Length: 332
Image (cartoon, rainbow, N blue to C red; front, side):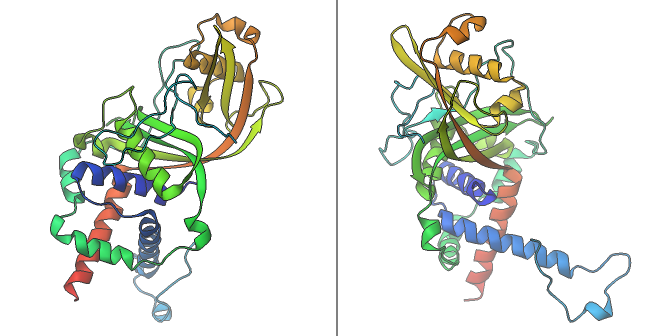
């Protein structure tokens, strides 16, 4: 399912777009992330104990073992709305079927609680400058990446419905939604993640486009969706396990909305509160206690394993990639 490499790829696509340069492809990112992790494990296994120094019996053992469906797209407020477009700044004219992640108010409160995080925006400009790769080294970076191990054909052909979410993390660790758009149509991961990383960053109409100064405060979360099953009844799903997509008739129109599996738990909602909030998101304006009386209310449950990372993780990894490229260039 979703991995840290998927998150790093979304960051690389976004930063490259802002810096007007080419980004690594997904398979290069996956391989380089594996090599970066192996480097850390090797350094850890060969570091001497600061209290006891090197053990002569271990000197020959320089390496240790590493530790080991829905058929149609949906839109944000109403399934009848047009699919979201990629940002105008992008070269492609591809139109993407898209759904925005919830940021509708709770049935009992209009506020959205924040989530603690270790990411900080304190060194924004310096961090961006340090992470940026120079144009003169870009050829070396991509030749280095092209020599990465190629994935199996099965991996190259993976397709999933997916969501990409951007959050900003305040200096106090509070999380705020900055953009989230996804699709229920299966996407080839390399193309789908790149497209929706940019669409969520620049094309979520609830927010202004993400700017370069915000990069050090960003965190990304990728969710790949699977196991779509019609609910036997409207409460036939589990909090924290299932995402939910509802549809119902209202004022002569078919309306619908969705929440990812983690949303209800993050908000502290019961199943009933989740249903009411979803209906509000879709456009229903009735009284909360009357939600069961809405005609033809249906639901599809699904599962999705998400993964996330912050700017600092991408920055450190990308700095290592750039250094590897420079070192390889110097040895030629």
